[in-house]
Length: 193
Image (cartoon, rainbow, N blue to C red):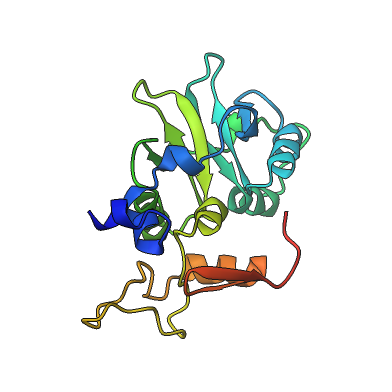
């Protein structure tokens, strides 16, 4: 009842907003086929601005993801980005979520796995979208990232902040992005795409 009475408030958003409401879909999904060279995949990562790309097979089924972290490991191995196919570099352990799940559940999965994006698969297992931590920030789902800041509380003293515990993933992203986030609002302290 509370969520329906206060749909625009922070708690209402957490209780009602679904992944499909905020995910990137269609042409906004970063995606390459498993046979493309790493150099081409890097262009897709840069063009879509999510720090990752999905990797699909020739029929469009998800094979895996390639992230900025994977790129660093690839460069450490001194692989040639113009010769190495992306399919050689990915694992099959992509974290996924259903589009009908709550956006707050996406945040929880990201926090638990120390990742900044999730692949969204529909009921048939087809690629439907990608949800990024930035999408959750902009939707107001993430409103308190730092344990050094007192999270908002209910009248009984319980924390309203779903991420009141310090998490390395969000702290790293927060520092790297220039966002200062707390109390249902954020201020952008440096330009970000």
